[in-house]
Image (cartoon, rainbow over all chains, first blue to last red; front, top):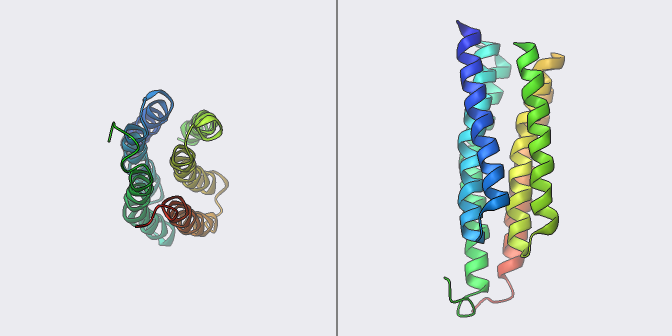
Length: 98
Length: 87
């Protein structure tokens, strides 16, 4: 039972990471690429790492992996927001698409 | 279960190579930073999976430190991009 839950979570995480990668490669604009990368960062990392937590059970290692999940969920959207804000501020008035 | 984690580690390594295509050939600097940010997240997941495969629990500390370093690098490079046009 535990193995089935872990395989479902890990497959979902791999699916989101691969979809984010395809989005980074194929989407036309830089803002859409940032959108795809944020999906890949948050949901793919959450599902993959939570499957590893369920495998390990309750221990010190699983608490550390939970800390990594919280840290990624705080920092990754912040980094994407800062990068796109810097891009928009740099191209303000020069790019008619924005 | 160990076999499934090995397979997913190999698939993640291949997708890191696909991200490096965008990181090398991106037309803007922000493209490259976004691609490198995704590569950092994938490498954190890969390090945690390898710590499960090798049964070495201190690799998780390495993954936590890697997350902190990649966040600081992204912030500083994005401030360097937008610094020239500050009003």
